[in-house]
Image 1: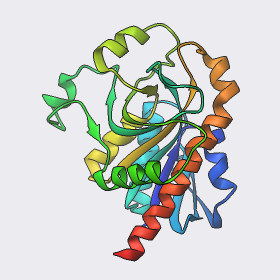
Image 2: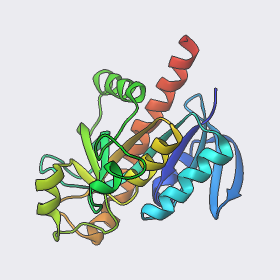
Image 3: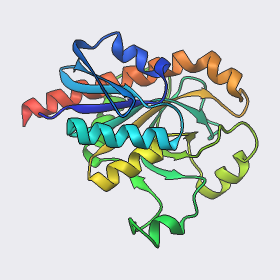
Length: 235
């Protein structure tokens, strides 16, 4: 089986994966460090890309080109947009969109998409739904829409994004990674846990809650890797 790519935005989000990875080998390409090894019975290539869409896209394309991964999982933190979400809650993306791009750029020009959304892989989404049903988590787990933009969302722009796109959460990388996966026909899914909300907003709250959110995202992703491995052996 080809390896599974895991992309985090920052080192704190990647740390839980590096604490459990075995048979590790380290590679560097395009200024990105790739950690190759085993997690949950699955061969993985794990990395952190750096924050923002361009860094995420560079890392995703390098991951696909250099390691020929079978799928990409985005793991890490996000800002809660839906008021049901609390610190630490986890969102599994069903679809992803940019909140700071004119919609016609994607549908009227290359890559001529049918709409503005990059959709999570159906098989990975099905496995994620099984995980939600079969496991108990200390946090709530939601399935739904994630949106991405270049700015950290505090209060400015929050209402406009919610009215236009109605996302569960927002980040600065996932849509760019999904865009690269779409162009390469590489299956993807995103697992993001909440580090800040409307009530607990701002970069101070992100920093305060980053580690617990990252661990919650890691724990779900680790289970997903185990399900991927088990499903492969059953085929």
